[in-house]
Length: 221
Image (cartoon, rainbow, N blue to C red):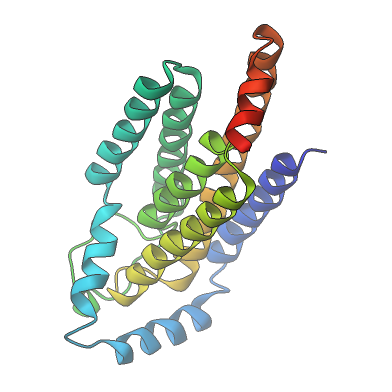
């Protein structure tokens, strides 16, 4: 089984388990402990960067970012398959988390603890879902022909940014720890599916274009 399929299945199962655990309230004790700890960490110098990190992956901003990435890659490579795949994957993740929110209807932390307004239900964290999907998806979809060293650095940066967004949502008091875990699992699953489809598309391109392999090897070198 390809690595992308294994990662996608594992993270998909983990997301389903997170939904079930949240439904039964088994995360309440951990959520409360982490929430209280985050409140104690608040400081005047830390709150502004946390707000900024969170704002990057707000729904409207994330939509614009996704469209910009897809359009830039399409214009640069003059190919639309991967950019459309990337945009569709982010859209699918967004629709999934919204459907789960409306079905589960898990309440957010007390609004008196919020440092910014947040609408809708709590699980999973939409910001974290989109941040994970976009950051990991960029590497999974567009990074197949990158040199190994560049790809490793990109994976590390993607994980750091996604984690920072998740942490910011807890710090701002608008999400529970379990919401962020659920968002990460959903985002990993979405990016893994995108990566698997991108790899399949790359193989098809290589078969239809005999020079594709040599171009990819030159890019890696």
